[in-house]
Amino acid sequence: MMQSSFFCQDSAVSSNGNHPHRSPVRVLVVDDFAPFRRLVGSMITKTPEFHVVAEASDGEEAVQKAGELQPDLIFLDISLPKLNGIAAARQIRKLAPKAKIVFVTQEFSLDVAQEAFRSGAMAYVVKIYAGTDLPAAMDAVFEGKRFRSAAVSR
Image 1 (cartoon, rainbow, N blue to C red):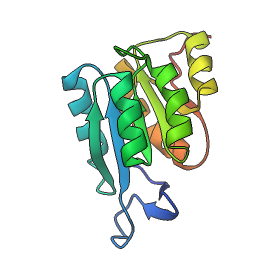
Image 2: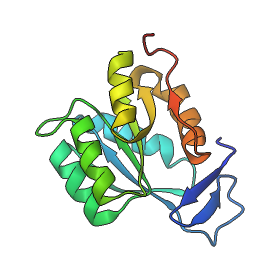
Image 3: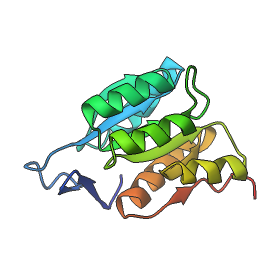
Image 4: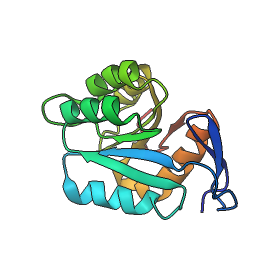
């Protein structure tokens, strides 16, 4: 269970469930593999303050939905059809500047992770470690800190 406070737009949301009057954190999950989108969605919605508002299967759809829905948090893969995740993140930063971007990817490269951070991401999680790293990344992001999976090559 995540212990930090999460921020949704302009209001704080405690992950302990003690603030039901607060707005939920609105989440967009982007991955071209539908079972992984569902897995991420099920992981994050175990915390009641998180609500998946949409899913996208490619970078162009991610940009469109981010601009339209203005999510608070976006889980974004790098290897996406039509528009890769890093290019999508750059466009999303312009259309949904308040959204916090967390890359969830198979890429272990430090160079790729650095490029992801330059594109506006707050966290970089390697997919095979998502079970343990995703909660830590979410805590870090909502504390205003960056997070990177320890498995990323140095």
